[in-house]
Image (cartoon, rainbow, N blue to C red; front, top):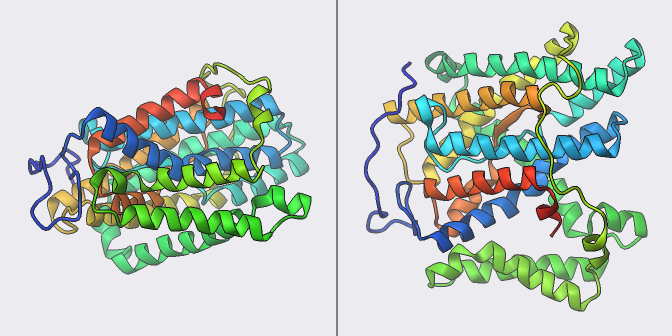
Length: 371
């Protein structure tokens, strides 16, 4: 299948009857683009930062190295998003596809890494080097999958892809429920499930719903930000905001370094275990990209659709391989941002470019994320 970009209709504005405020090829003003991009980032930034922090923390990686790994996750989220929306040389879906370090990997990476440390006596640097070596090769598996879409579509039907995405979503429900009740910090201090925590969570949800039902496009576009700001303001009044974090010492700049943890090692058994998850990336991407096509009011059949799938999965594989060189765990297309597109009514690729640029900025200057 050719990976060259298929011709795209010039949809500078959504068709009559569309639920979108800005369609795929629309060019929102700077302020609207930045606002929509911030909503996508707010929906996923913790998910981008969590996997490397979870894996490295479990493997005994020191704080300085964890900070670097988190920054690389942000960096390749930004680079990957830019490729997805811009689609240079057919790499990417050409839609507002958001991608970052996949949540499908942490558990297996921790299990494999722990065995390398325990059974083979590897240091944490050697363990990371071996894991990244496996991820480097695994990226080629994903890229190979993108070139076999005609064959894979016979095996990975929409039902299979849909169920896979649904199961990943269901597995994340617990994360949302824990956060709604106060998070892991609340578990530690005994306030988990406290009425005040539940009140704040429900207030944010209600604020988002009310803003989203507004007939004013700008208010609908900013519904997530409205909900977060309302919740934050009430949390300040309730004394639940820790201002001390702003005055702690933070890293101002992080420089990406290839092979920072040593040149790649490789373990065949680790690769065989993780290879199944690289297949999951392909299956998940088919479901996610199909959903993105639906909410962006794009076709889900035909040459253009197949080309988008192929390019999007190719981008996942390329970012996984390239990211491994600099210290980023496997990258995959995210699903939750399809909900942001539907909620905000913004499917513009221009917004994706803003997302990519902001993530790259956050990666290089991590102090911005704190503030």
